[in-house]
Amino acid sequence: MSAPRITGHAKLAGVIGHPVEHSLSPVLHNYWLARHGIDGAYVPLPVVPGSFTTAVRGLQASGFRGANVTIPHKEAAFALADEVETQARIAGSVNTLVFRDDGTIHGSSTDGFGYLASLEAESVSLESLSVRGPALLLGAGGAARSIATSLMEKGMSVIFANRTNERATTLANELAQTWCAHMQSPAPALSTLDWDAWESSLGSMSLLVNTTSLGMQGGPAPEWTPDLSHAAETLVVSDIVYVPRETQLLRCAAARGLKAVGGLGMLLHQARPGFQAWFGAETEVDDATVAHILAVLKNR
Ligand code: ATR
Image (cartoon, rainbow, N blue to C red; front, side):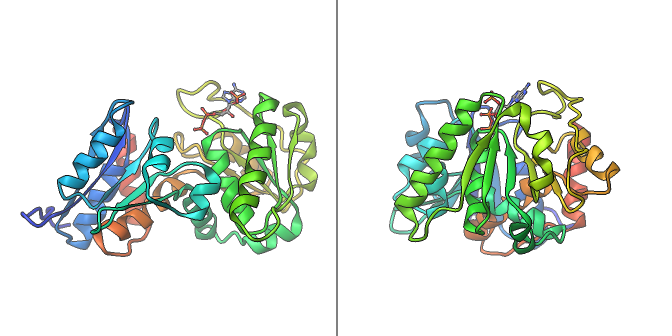
């Protein structure tokens, strides 16, 4: 692959976060830039809480085309954007900013897109899932919110189960409200299940999504091994954890012959809309992209 080209006309973007040094986005975007032979660069932008607006205005003044936004600035990005896409409005957070020539900022949330694209890449059909039953989402944080929103847009009913049940109830209520405020159609069914009850409920679910940090290397319970014995044989099991690439959850699913989808795809696909907006080229998550990112992860 040719060396990156960065001239005085380079197209610039980056990722704003705190901390930001662990973000894989610079590796991914610069890999795609080099592959496409684009004159551009994507940099990590460490911005402390409280300095987000100053930083964004500075980037705009410096000719940047936009930025990804990660923890803890996603809500601030939502508040700052002049125009926010419907899905990001429902999800309540923004992870992609595009600076327009007229000085306005467009905000979107691409996590849900990334999740759906990762299912599609594994030949999972949302249409057939929604006919078979609801999606069960484990967790009630920002990732659960974004994924639930994108599943709802595809007409799927969503059930949340979270260790702290109150958070799940609050999330379901908030999503129902924001859906009604922003969409013309009635919200698909949203409900909650007790954390202790989710494993025994799997027989009626079409999709299981782990959005918690359970199973993550360095997380609260890396060896977390759920009981999938009640699952219907058509259940699709997905995990947004991507380190390790094959979590215990995915291993249990594979052992039962269930379709299992890992979290790396979501991470890679969510980057595509930003890349296209800032650098003007459609890119894809192919085997070479996955291999490149896996090699980087291995050396961390
Ligand atoms: P994000 O916004 O990235 O989705 P988060 O807000 O940190 O993440 O949420 C992490 C999720 O993992 C939460 O749903 C959390 O459950 P609580 O709301 O009860 O805290 C869940 N989680 C973390 N550790 C857990 C554990 N040991 N057992 C069960 N759930 C856990």
